[in-house]
Image (cartoon, rainbow, N blue to C red):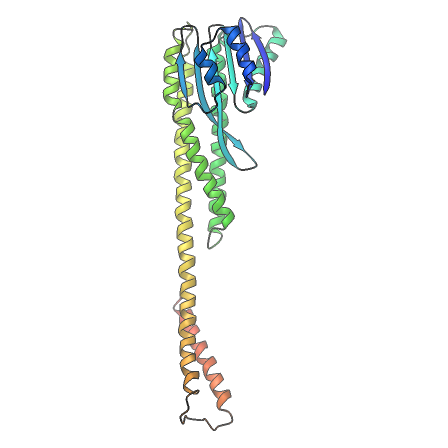
Length: 309
């Protein structure tokens, strides 16, 4: 568990936890007189995206993709947020540098001039900055996603088939694209409900910020669709290359089978217990060997000319 402490920004207090313990939540519940349902959901990182509006606060659950560089896989990072008129409490299931960066920016402004711009003194603006930073990180991740797909495509085109490692990487990419779409898709409805809910708690105009978030949500979903289509296209390329490789191998094996069949028939004739031409000739065996090699060479040249291999 990690607690960044409570940050005082004018008349606003912002408390952030990472994977809090039950005792930490109990303190918050007593301090802000939170509803028992919020207390239950605060510790449950299996909760799906939702927004609950109470008389004195808004409880929000959103999930964002987080990347594990070791496994090259994305996973869900839960963001739980409680917004009152003069406080905001945020909880994430995993460490999020974006939130730490936003808090550091506020601290720097307070240290430099002791005050913060009026429009920033709102729990809802703070939430906007958090979601906006999460979206920016997702957009950067999707850009790298597209670049990785281009590299995979180049590697695939440089060889006659896709290697096992390349195919494994492609499968991970496909899984990541599906997960990211699953995580971001509910945000459109959540943001729409949040925009309506904040009107009862905040008198300022936040429409421009919600419009910005909606725009980024649409952009992320659009990019996810693109990378998903590109990933599926690369799977089609993989299937095509594998089929071509298989057909080529079968073609070569068939050619050698035909050549060996001719040579087997020829050698088999001289294994019969009947009179055959040149059977008493001392050079018969040598002549037969050269004849078999010649037949094999002619057959291979013929198939080569026909571009069978």
